[in-house]
Each structure stands twice: as structure tokens, then as C-alpha cells.
Amino acid sequence: MSYTQEEVVFSNNDVTLAGTLTLPRIPKHHPAVVLLHGSGPLNRDQEIFGMKPFWIIADHLTRKGVAVLRYDSRGVGNSSGAPYHFTLQDVAEDALAAISYLKTRNDINPAQIGFCGQSQGAVVAPIAASRSRDVAFIICLAGFGIPGEQAHISQMTTIAKTDGASDHEIEGIVVNLRQIIRLIREEAGETEIRPLITMMLKNQCASMSQESKKETNEDDKADTHVDCVLSMYKSSWFRFFIDYDPKPALKQVMCPALFLLGELDTQVPAEINRTAIADILKKSGNKNYTLKIIPKANHMFQSANTGSPTEYMNLEKKFAPGFLEMMSDWLLERVDIVAQ
Image (tube, rainbow, N blue to C red):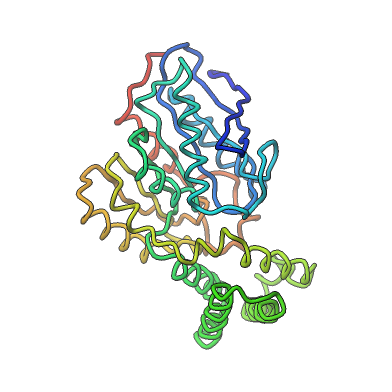
């Protein structure tokens, strides 16, 4: 192997975060990337449906001469805390703690440490960058540029439409979601929220094509599914998320920034978010940004057919052609690589 791997631990106040640091073998000051995971309980490889996207990114970038730190999200693996018992602001502080840790090492260039975040991580990266000049660059993969409530409704309706829902069914989903969000803001009890979630999930399954229904196994463990969604909706993470507007943080990002979106992404639909992000960046005064849409790519930047999460398990466990190179080429133009 052309690089080394080291198990590391760092802290953000009372939270301990455990991860893996991959380093080029030459013992010099290397630029570094901190990988920021998506929402939910995810390990350091961000392993989803058999794919390990963060391992792939770390392997690719480290072979190019860039150190990469990836770590387990709160409550996963050897990291302390609990899933969803935090806010985006807390995760941004975790990210900055990762930079503080890397700055203590004599094998990392302290002036060339940045973030690469996917989904939630692509929203957290601008928050952290807006707070600290220690952030040398950010790479945002499938990050949204619209307010949280709108982003969540956009996600749910786009997935439903892709899975075969009619316009009438989508209107029902929107009404249902707005009721749930209103009750969350009012801190309503489980007895009020649970029936709405149950109805929403049933409507989603009813609107799916037969193929999608078969792939999602919607009849299995329905009550457990409701419990999981209810727990997420009532969490401090979701309450913060629905009221979060990414515009202020994005406007304050002055470091080099790369934004990539997937053309077929149903979780963060490309066009509405590309328009919003581009509008914010044009007004921010930051001239050093790149914003691109990856053709035929889904939320995980795999080559996809529809972009629906129901097909994730059946896709090749690799990124779309050219995705990794687009990211590394952009990065290598902005950091100093130690001669191998």
C-alpha cells in the first residue's frame, strides 16, 4: 500500500470521536481533508448498502498525496454520544475539533486542512468554514441550498414522484408533512404525531410501483419503521434541521469551495439546489468556487437509473465515472503536494 493508516481519537468537549487517518508514506507536512458524514448513524466509511464511499474517497485522495481523516459519527463505533441527539451546529464543532487535532501533528500542513462533506456533511462544512479561518477549503457533495423544511419536503416528494406517485398523492404527502412539522414545532406528543407518520408511510408505499414495493419490502417490520421515523422526527437534530437556513453560512464562506450535485439525486434534487447555491455564492463575494452537476448520478454519486433510494442496493458499489477525478483535480490545484 502506498500510504499508512492510523487509528486516532480526538474530542469536542465531552464527546469523543474515533476515526482513521490515512497518510502518504513520505514523512512530510501533507495537506489534509476531513470527511464529514451524512445524517444518521454512520461509521467512518459511511457504509451504506454495501458501499463504503468514504473509504473509496480516502484511498483515492491519499494515493494522490493528501492525508484524509474519517471518523465514526456520534454514537457509532468507538465514538461517544447518540445518533440524532445533537444539531448541525454540534456536528460543525466536531468538524472544527478534527482540524484542531490535525494541527497538532507534525506530519500535517496546518495551513492546508479542509473539509469534504456529503449530504449533511455538505451543509456542515460551510457552517464550520464560516466560523473559522483554519478551514482552507471545502468540498460539498450533495449539499442543499434551501431552508431545511423546504429541503425535507422537496426530498420526500421527489422520491415519491420517482417511485410512481401521482400529483394528487404528492399533494397529500405535502399536507401530511406540513402537519407533522407543525406538531414537531409545537412539541406535540407521540400520540398526535404517530398516526400522521403511519399514514404518510402507508401512502408512500401505496404510491410506489410494484417493482419499488418489492425492493423496499414495505410489509416487513412496519411498526419498527414507524418507530424509527418518529424517533428521528422528534429528535433535537430534526427540530434544528427544519428551521435551518444554509444561506447565512454559505454567504460567509470565503475559502475555495467545490459544490457537486447528482443529476438524478432524489434526496437533494439538483436543479433547485444548484439555483439556490449559485444565487447565494454570486452575492457572497467569494470568486473561488466551482459548482457542477454530475450526469446520471444519484445522491451517493453512483451512476443511477432513476435516482430513487430503492435502487441503491442493486447498483455497482462505485462512484460514477470521472467523479473522483473531478474532486481530486480541483483539490490538487489548491494545495501543495509533497513530492513522492
